[in-house]
Image (cartoon, rainbow, N blue to C red):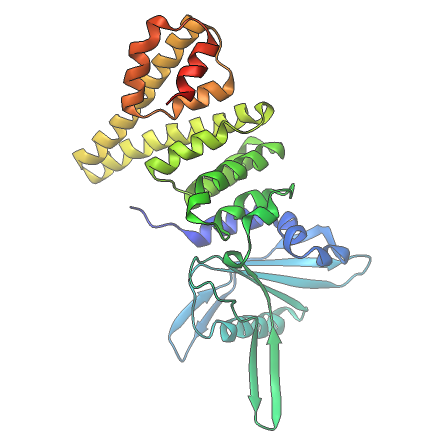
Amino acid sequence: MTPIDHDRLFKELLSTFFVEFLDLFLPEMMQYLEPSSITFLDKEVFTDVTAGDRYETDLLAQVQFQGQPSFFLIHVENQATAQPEFGKRMFRYFARLYEKYDYPVYPIVVFSYDQPRVAAASEFRVEFPDFAVLNFSYRVIQLNQLYWRDFLAQPNPVASALMAKMQIAPADRPRVKAECLRLLVTLRLDPARMQLISGFIDTYLNLSAEEERAFTLEVGQIEPAAQEQVMEIVTSWMERGIERGLEQGIEQGLERGLERGLEQGRREGELSLLLRLLTRMVGSLPPEVEVQVRGLTEAQIERLTDRLPSLTTVDELRSWLNEL
């Protein structure tokens, strides 16, 4: 399995929706920054001579104060793993950025790891028993300390994406994925931004086969106006999954990978044929009924295929599905 490139995914999300990110987590900052002035600067590279490590800033933006000719920097780091002495690194970033640009620096950390769940430190200190030399603070947004339900009503694309990385009970994973998509389709974004967020959600809420069936049922509960758009996203995931399976099989030279891709394609073909036959037999299918059909197991698809000749109305089909 290809490892997740956490830095790339978060940088794409936050740079594309930077104002929305600030508005969601730091609304007080929106009172004094000029949104139209945001300019992303080139990444800065720092070398820790003593440890031999090389670090790059994740996101650095220059922003103007509202109604003033002065500027400040917003430095955002995404941290996908818990690391000791992280606060020291944030201070070194701050000191070097402040020295180079001579602007005030607003430091923010997004902790996106799953474990540990203890609250992360938000400051770095240098002090003696009789004298505090330094107390450096930085903003912390620790996703595993946030509860996804608290963001359901936020009409914000960053909320629809980052709910996938918040505190989620294992049994809630299918529902959270459905809720992320429900919120996403209400935002009416352009196709490119829609794909960015839906891909983020699918990456971090990669469901098992059993969870996928529960997810399909959750999608069936979404209001009809949004359900069709959600199904379009799900269908695009399926198509990309087939392509990835084939590509992985070819690139790796493994018949198993190729067979997996072909198996996914075969199932999609069977479903497409079954849906066409059902439309001929009972008429146009409501979105929630199509969602239920797409969530059937292979054994259930076979049973429904055998039952086709006796089905004449959508209500009969719906009753049969609800009896499963």
